[in-house]
Each structure stands twice: as structure tokens, then as C-alpha cells.
Length: 232
Ligand SMILES: CCCCCCCC/C=C\CCCCCCCC(=O)OC[C@H](COP(=O)(O)O[C@@H]1[C@H](O)[C@H](OP(=O)(O)O)[C@@H](O)[C@H](O)[C@H]1O)OC(=O)CCCCCCC/C=C\CCCCCCCC
Ligand SMILES: Nc1ccn([C@@H]2O[C@H](COP(=O)(O)O)[C@@H](O)[C@H]2O)c(=O)n1
Ligand SMILES: [Mg+2]
Ligand SMILES: [Mg+2]
Image 1 (cartoon, rainbow, N blue to C red):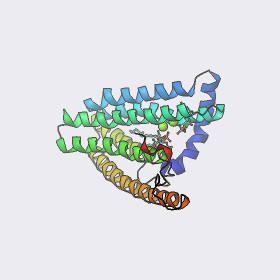
Image 2 (image 1 turned 135 degrees about the vertical axis):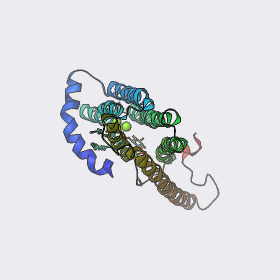
Image 3 (image 1 turned 180 degrees about the vertical axis):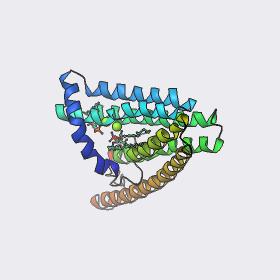
Image 4 (image 1 turned 90 degrees about the vertical axis):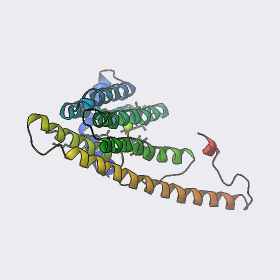
């Protein structure tokens, strides 16, 4: 939903900055790499120590690079398959650091095994949600569903809650509860999203296989499997 409705707004806001970076000779790949490094550093330096406010500030400063890199590539007319691969792959690295950092906090001084498990579930389910789309598309299906909780929702819900929870360190009362609530929401939302995507891929695969069989005169043949279907 955010991807659909907020992207246009951020594209307008970030376009001048993207143009500025291009004029300074910065490449989209450099923005992708530096942005990811900043998110990973913010998450793994601050979150395991329970410093949620500063961790969220650092992550927020860098996470928008994920919207700037593609904007730069499009403005410069240099969008590439390599760039798409690098962007998506490093998204997974950044997400691992964010939820891994939270899990490390709960495994250590945060001392809550259940929330540690929920944070790990958020990490793993987010990766699997993204994988369903990548794998479905790799076998030639449209995967025409985004689902309830995409990456933008996972990040916004978790980071807003982490940032506000971090205000506890400045004496704001009652805010610590926000992060656990957010983690449960992201976990449940990711599970629903996974279900939505799996159901869609199953339907699309059945339709594509049926169309393939009809096209080949109903013989067993390859069953209409696209050539990439066996790839890992
Ligand atoms: C007192 C204050 C304390 C707290 C201060 C902190 C406030 C700041 C908190 C949070 C800010 C969070 C910002 C998060 C921004 C996220 C931006 C982003 O990176 O979005 C990425 C997303 C997807 O991009 P891609 O197409 O490159 O990625 C694809 C995606 O990963 C797919 O994954 P899937 O969805 O399938 O799981 C992959 O399949 C695919 O491979 C991959 O290519 O981009 C977007 O979705 C664009 C829209 C971004 C919308 C951002 C909205 C931010 C809005 C508000 C945040 C500010 C809230 C302030 C609250 C203040 C509270 C006091
Ligand atoms: N280093 C990069 C990063 C991205 N791209 C292209 O942008 C697309 C992603 O756009 P976002 O707005 O989501 O960042 C990606 O699919 C590539 O086409 C690039 O070329 N190089
Ligand atoms: Mg990007
Ligand atoms: Mg990205």
C-alpha cells in the first residue's frame, strides 16, 4: 500500500537530491552500497544495546537511499538488471540487520525469549515474502499481488515503533510497549502476506501450466514449465 501511494510523493521530494548526486558524479550503485552499509551499522551498533532512538535516527537517514538509487538510475537512463539485482539483494541484507539487531537485544539485555523469537520470525518471514515474488517471477509468473505487509510497511511499522520506544531513554513513560506491539503486528502481517502470495503463485502456476498443456496439444511434455523453472 505504501509502495503504491507513498512512492509518488517520495519520488517528487527526492528527485532534486538524486539529480544533485548525479551532477556530483555519484553513481546509483554507490548510493545503494553506502545506504545499506549505513542501515546495517545503525541497526547492529545501536539496537543490540537497546539504543532504539539513535539506532532509528541513523537507519532512517540511510534507508531512504533505497528510494534515491532507483530515482538516480531512472533520471540518468541507466537502470540496469545489475542495479535491480544489487538493490533487491542489499534490501535483504538491510532487513536482516534491522530485525537481527532487535533479536540480539531481546536475546541479551532485553531478556525476552518470546520477543527474540518474534523478531527472528519477522526477519525470516520478511525474507520469505520477498523470495516468493522473486522466485515466482523467475519461473515466468506475474505474481500479481503485493499483499498486506510489503517491505515498506515492515520498515515503517518497526522503525516508527523503535524510534518512539527509544524515547523511554529520555524519560518518556509508557512508550517501551510500542516496539513489542509493532513486532507482533509485523510478524502477523508477514504471515498473512506470505499466504496471499503463495495462493496467488499457486493459482498463476496452475493457469500457466494449463495454458502450456493446451498449447502443446495436451501432451505431458514439459507441462508448460518455463525454461527457468528448474533454476535454484
Ligand atoms: C520522536 C521521534 C522518534 C522517532 C523518529 C523516527 C521516525 C522515523 C521512522 C521511520 C521512518 C521509516 C522510513 C522507512 C522508509 C522505507 C523506505 C524504503 O526503503 O522503502 C523501500 C520500498 C521498497 O523498495 P524496492 O522496490 O527497492 O524494494 C523491493 C522490495 O524490497 C520487495 O520486497 P517485498 O515488499 O516483496 O517484501 C522485493 O520483493 C523487491 O525485490 C525489492 O526490489 O520502497 C517503497 O515502498 C516506496 C515507499 C516508501 C514509503 C516510505 C514511507 C515513509 C513514511 C513515513 C515515515 C515517517 C514516519 C514518521 C513518524 C514519526 C514518529 C514520531
Ligand atoms: N543501483 C541501482 C539501484 C536501482 N536501480 C534501478 O532502480 C530500480 C529500483 O528502484 P527503487 O526506486 O525501488 O530504488 C531497480 O529495479 C533498477 O532498475 C539501478 O539500476 N541501479
Ligand atoms: Mg532502491
Ligand atoms: Mg530496494
